Length: 357
Image 1 (cartoon, rainbow, N blue to C red):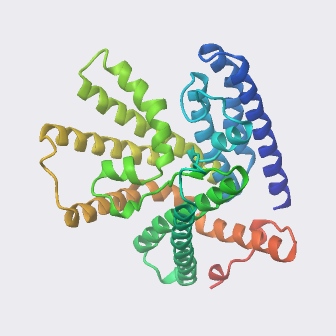
Image 2: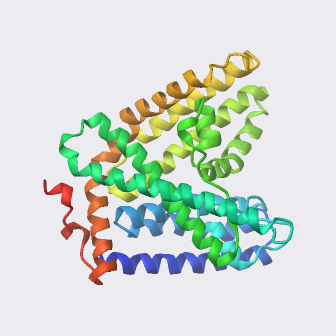
Image 3: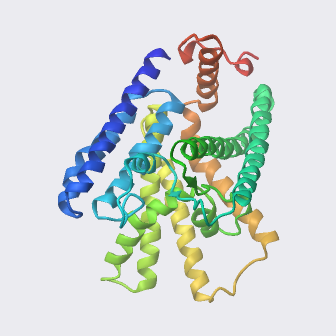
């Protein structure tokens, strides 16, 4: 664990240095091909850096933050687009967290917004976060009975686990960013279990920062190019499918970085399948002028069932091959050992209570 922590610190020092270079390049190099060439070595470096980390939490989060989100934001920045570009120069203190964190920052007006409403909003978010932390803790306790849980139910628990973990991690990121740079952050999830369709799930409720980054970097360019050869409707469907393809490839990269196992293509197939399903859904809605809508009491269970069934078949099998429950528990125990006793131990030497049963 000691060597991993040291590598993690070095990786993020390099990331900060690279972002400082990008910020400086943006001030002196005009947007366009020249800026893209100047930033290309950083994007290549951001793909390589996470491969130096072997733990699931540090390596996975770093891979997601810099290999995916930061790189896509820098591609937009090269052409004067995206959250890193603005008519007014963005301060370096804001540029760095906006570049490497999975959030889209929005300034909170200090004069126009009453302090009471801001405090009220913060209290509401805090209550929701504490409730989800409590549920997450209960979920971890369920793992004590791991050997008695049916495999399908276990996979369902992993879905909830991933959702709660991302919510908690992003809430921590939001709190740190709000404290350090006085910026409010847009929510990354909007109760995905209430989605009434796959388009609603992927486009408006699940991992909204990825959606907002894929739209200008993949969807818009592909749609614009495709419209030269086909109708607007078909171009939109091609753009949707390509966006899901890119998302699948990036997930394959992150899975490889976390588990170190050879990619099988199952994760890409999962996203390609959903790309096809969403494209069909959009085409049907346009053909019926939005009149063929199921009531939420029917559409919500169907949407959730479709996501879970396809996850069971394609998303979770490669995820479970590198034993995320075992590794995650060992890494958590090693981290707690460091925080409580100040001892750095290897995650592989950490003992998990429910693994001993």
